[in-house]
Length: 515
Ligand code: BG6
Image (cartoon, rainbow, N blue to C red; front, top):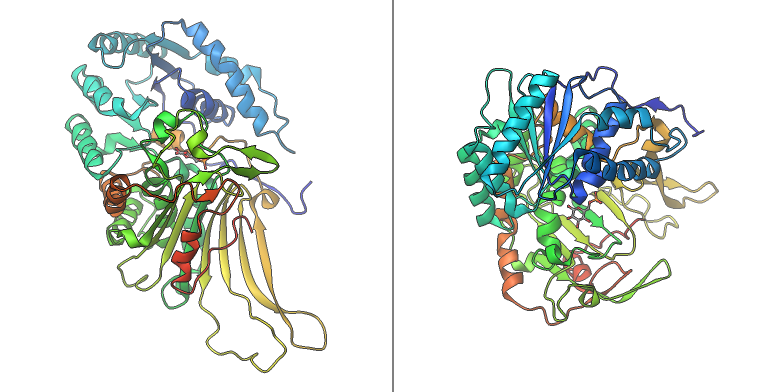
């Protein structure tokens, strides 16, 4: 048992989504197996899927629905096991799985072939007639980026995304939405020829993380923080997304992508937006998205001097000897791809003028750790100057996103004893101690929100484009010039020295990763 009383997390007011069909393009892909279908299982177990529901997989591999379901069983079981804990034994509930599997069918077809869409249309009509789904369909594009526009075009041509009354048609588009500013604008233009903005759900799975959503609760459900959440009291902000994984088997994707495109205009920008946006007038999707959009619009376009790139060399993490990025399978021996990026962002608005936002992310760093650290300004007057105090520690509010989910406040306290000796201490809130969390792979909220039509956690066209606009000059500079010093940080380290130098210039220092 934990030290504290635990509280169930499942929202008692949540009701099952309306009856509908979910069509997954990329039914045999990794994302579907590891995340989408396990999330559906969890939603069904929580009673959040409708009774009248159907899942239709679409992929080019010839196979039966039975083969598809069979292949998914072990992935769902593995996902459940991974989340095993004190309150969750980690065994797959076969009854729930069979219920879900019983609603799953499969359509074989090439994503670019118009015939696929004819077959899918017929299959959907039959499924709807059998299960009475109200004509509602959510299309999930869990496919490679190059297919996004093409699939939407073909769905449109086949008349599959036309809405009628309550019979909504929605499309989830996965990341990456474009690979630079121009391609993001082009993709928006292409999909908006067929779809209306309200039909598009651009996913950024960081917004599915409870700890990320909690930033809004922390800021806007408490009167305590907002009055000091500005340039008057905040010195600077550090956002770190550190990973221990390397490129693994993804070189084909990662080589032309790199850390900046892979993580910054999407995931790190979501953390930035939650931290820095103005309070919305309500939690209505557009009210929140307007504020996120305004924030992105206020971020100054980056210049190269505010950006540092790095690439990992050989090293060790937890006694594991690890190869250099350039020695990973599928990576060019002289690769110029960055596996680390650090940026200094400036936000041009009244709240944040003069407050630097430092962002960093990298692969093969010392620990897997994501946090947003807010450094408050020092006390205005050094009252303890004459006392035997070596050093007065800093005030930090640390939002720990993963894996140790929680919030920490660091402040100074007097060490018991006759002298005035101070120590920097920490007040901790851990999610696990307080809430009994339901097992989740992180896609449950996002999928449920699409099924219920809540777009709050999804990216609008303007936001995606604004984020790419900020980083585009750095993308251009980095792709256009070879970095002579690569590799420049060892696997298992905190990144390249240049990233430290960038903060030192302004009298700051990165926090130790995972401290
Ligand atoms: C993905 C990136 O979008 O996010 C990966 O393509 C990265 O490179 C991953 O590892 C990180 O997500 P999470 O949820 O594991 O922190």
